[in-house]
Length: 223
Image 1 (tube, helix red, strand yellow):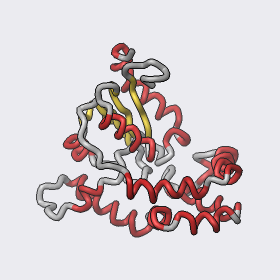
Image 2 (tube, rainbow, N blue to C red):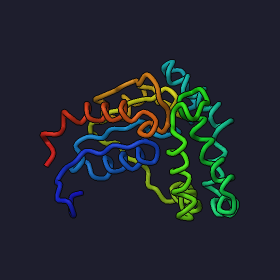
Image 3 (cartoon, rainbow, N blue to C red):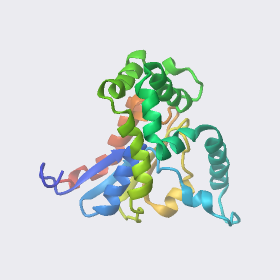
Image 4 (cartoon, one colour):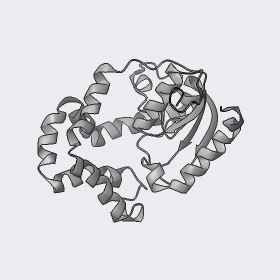
């Protein structure tokens, strides 16, 4: 953005892995980042590891309870991709049905909250997403990211960069606002009426409008 396109400052937005990248941009290059917009702040492992719960807010305690249930029921994919991505890739690269199941179950579980996949996504969109992995033979490299991230990423440091957050109710683990306020320069908070983890794909109009609304404040400062 700065060296090739010539922007001295810019805003950044992302969700899921994109949220992590965006937060690293703000942490590493705060002088270039005017503001960041997120749909999540990752899994709050620091909150989950706290022993003293006396001063936790009710929403922080609820987050811990939901996280415990999520790890018990939904996190196996993450552990496998972080430890044995190549073994997994041999199986999925040999079976289009297996790859489709591995990917599609996440769309079912993390979107809309009702398990009705095609009320939230078109068959074409789902098949296109699966095809991106199948036709490019990139199952292993995509899964291996989990292994590499766990071993090589530096710790995120705090940043004063303004943060906007829009939370979708069916996302994996929507963060407690009280926690975000304590750890980020939270300037914008939206609780969406519907939508899940794949917000930009599932509810593009809601997502785009919130991004535009938040960044509007910082547009005149970008250059």
